[in-house]
Length: 109
Ligand code: HEC
Image (tube, rainbow, N blue to C red; front, side, top):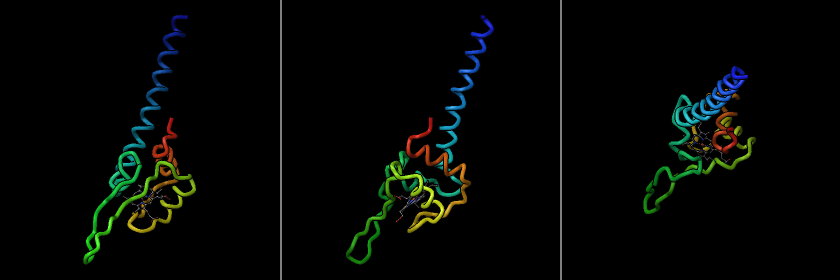
């Protein structure tokens, strides 16, 4: 009985580790996806942000990245597979895109 209790604690501790590792891994990938980090344009929390202001003659234009914390999975994969505008092209595997999607849309648990 005592051994079972000990085993239970060991296994639950392992489970907790796995949970933390996945989130940490996803966070790392988000800020360093083998190229410029998503956080640099979409913000740490994926809520989007203003990247720069460009002055063209008298006009001041704002360059920004949209929020990505509430997009559909299809839109997320589409954006990564065929990026538009200043969004860079990444070489991420499906597994990496999947975990990034879950991380950004707070589905990772
Ligand atoms: C240099 C800035 C920049 C970086 C870095 C960047 N993005 Fe983007 N991203 C953009 C811009 C700008 C758009 C809007 C493009 C457009 O007009 O459709 C966009 C669009 C998106 C969209 C589509 C949003 C929608 O509403 O459909 C997703 C999803 C997305 N980015 C995810 C990511 C992820 C994940 C990363 C990291 C792997 C990343 N982006 C890195 C600038 C960036």
